[in-house]
Image (tube, rainbow, N blue to C red):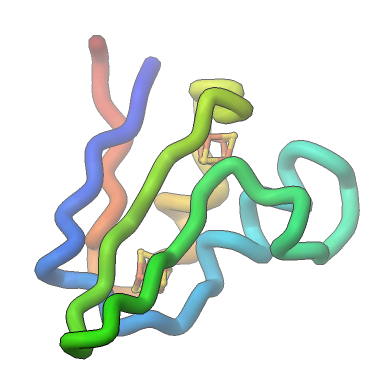
Length: 75
Ligand code: SF4
Ligand code: SF4
């Protein structure tokens, strides 16, 4: 299982970071998330997935995203 992201849909709420840290470490701590929201100087947002991603079978990051910017799917 893997996730795909569409940074154009992201509104920068960072709920995915909280969800990922809960999935990975059992606590809300964005510093421990494998997904990161990068705020660019020009106002755009980028969703970055790090190598720490566990490719969760039921990804909490996708479940928490309110705008469908993260989608789970087969590789
Ligand atoms: S798939 Fe799992 S480990 Fe990867 S970013 Fe989403 S919640 Fe985090
Ligand atoms: S939860 Fe969705 S909208 Fe919110 S920061 Fe993450 S990707 Fe962007």
